[in-house]
Image (cartoon, rainbow, N blue to C red; front, side):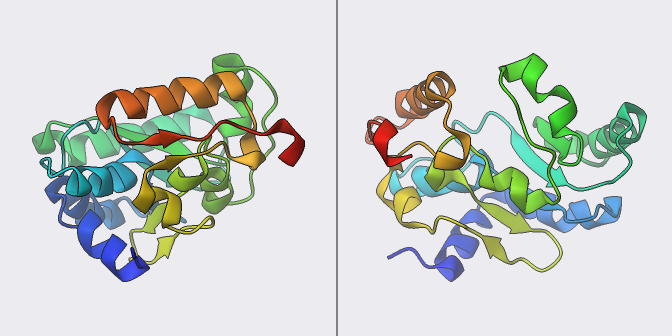
Length: 190
């Protein structure tokens, strides 16, 4: 069984994750969390006996800043690019306080104003991918537990019920890790 301690240890065996976690505090970001694919895909790679960085397209970092200006977020993005330049990876930083301002134009539909980084993680399309690693405390945030992640179960997140986007994301994951299982959504369960 995958415990939070095992999860933390495995995700930090990914050399990129450990570099990010060690350097991100230099940016001084509030509620800063390493999140998304770089965490659960590291687990799937371990289970698939693949290099731990294999197939990870980008490394997501969420933080929360009440300054909603594009300029403030862009300044952070530029600082991060400089900080991680030597890693030759794509680091995606997103101020969760700003997501509601651009989400509908990029993905369609409404998106609520968030009050924390954790609320952004809570809204991932797939339940088992709602994961975060606090870069200051090294605490794991897993509101839906780790079972689906460990078992490779891809089920829609009822907090973000967008069928088309769910299938697109789930199939993308299954194309890279063929053993993952897509669970068909049950609209009546929502």
